[in-house]
Length: 172
Image 1 (cartoon, one colour):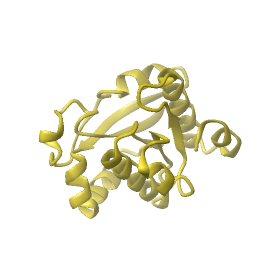
Image 2 (cartoon, one colour):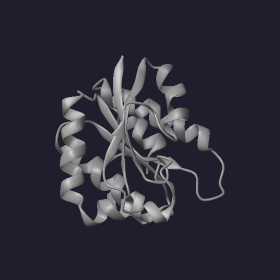
Image 3 (cartoon, one colour):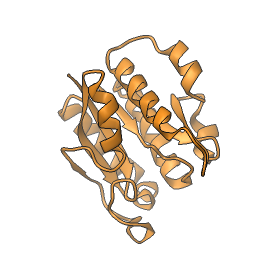
């Protein structure tokens, strides 16, 4: 079974709204928030979310080096096969967090993807550097397809498969 780590901001992890945007890094050895939906699609491919790491997106932006070191260290310690950063949807701060972390995980040899919508400013910033699974625009349709695609791409990355053709279909 492939081990996937999910990275979320404070809102997606269920830790509150913007009043908790400075939440320090933490994690749970379970699937939180959108991870509950992802688990269904991951199980179909013999994979599971072994942990959800999260922090406030404002905290991340102010302490990138600290959060990155903790999250990468955790992923290595728990031998993650791949990391899913997001879904960041259209939220700019979470998009920056997801894009930045996915880029660093990949640089550290841990396959990572992000997921966000075209309206997120981080999509344009990171699309040439990391795989970003397409999410529907605010109010759009296709959320379940996005979750299926996130799971599929993460597992193929975890298995070391060539994903260029798949990325052309489902990523920006």
